[in-house]
Structures are given as C-alpha cells and as structure tokens.
Image 1 (tube, helix red, strand yellow):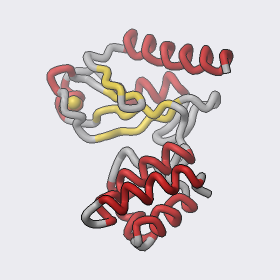
Image 2: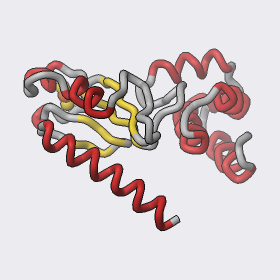
Image 3: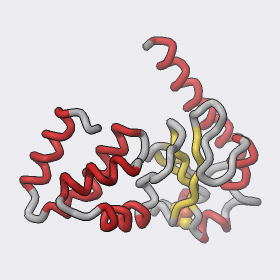
Length: 164
Ligand code: FES
C-alpha cells in the first residue's frame, strides 16, 4: 500500500495537472521508486489515483522501457540496442554483460544487484557503444570499462550497506 505521505504528494501533483492522465508516467515512476518495480498492486493504486483503468496504465507501462513490470536488480543496465552502438563494438555489449553477470535479459543477478535490459538509441551515438545504469550514461564502452563500471556500482552498494 502507498504510504500516506507519498499518496498525498502524488494526489496534489495530479490535482495541479490540467488532465489527470498527464501525470501517469510520473506517478508510475514514483510508485516504482517505492516498490522497486511496477507491481500489479502498484498498477491498481496508480489507476485509482489517476482515475484511469488498470488496463490503460498497463498499456503505458509496457510501452516504456523504463517502467518495470517485473522485479529488477538495484541497478538496471539499459544497453543501447541502436544500430550505431552495434557498429562500434566487436561483439555485443549486451551479450558481454549477460555472460559476465550470468543472467539473461531481465533476470536479476544472484546478489540482487543487476538486471540487464536492451533499449532503443539513448541519444548519444557519437559515444557509441553506450549504456545507462540507473539512468547514468556510460559511453565508448570496452570490456575493461564495463568491468570497472560494474565493480564501481557493486562497491558503492556494499559500502552503503555497511554504513547503514
Ligand atoms: S545507437 Fe546507441 S546511443 Fe544511439
């Protein structure tokens, strides 16, 4: 269930919009932030807040690469699947990451940290091949750089876990 504070904040944002459905993506992002992914429960709650049907929200949720209808790792890696990124990498960044992390598309690594997903061009083709990790851009990828990036995120996560 959505915490009262978040519910009230979202209700306020929706009330300020010209049309409630304008806020559909913002509401789903906020609920995804709370639940970790857009669960069935979250879809129903978002639909109630927005006066939309769960099916309408489902259609939006499945259209956007950045709304997750299944649980994901703490860090979601969106690998650019655009043609320029394919041209600038010998072999596939996607395959390299999946092999390295021991997962298939959309699966979560055993430590709960990573999920790898393909996405359309992320708009920085001159730094191909590229990927986003929780929205942070990384370009000119090489296997060595990918290894460093994964290590950095894993280190950050475990350091934060220790200091909590
Ligand atoms: S094709 Fe990969 S960033 Fe454009």
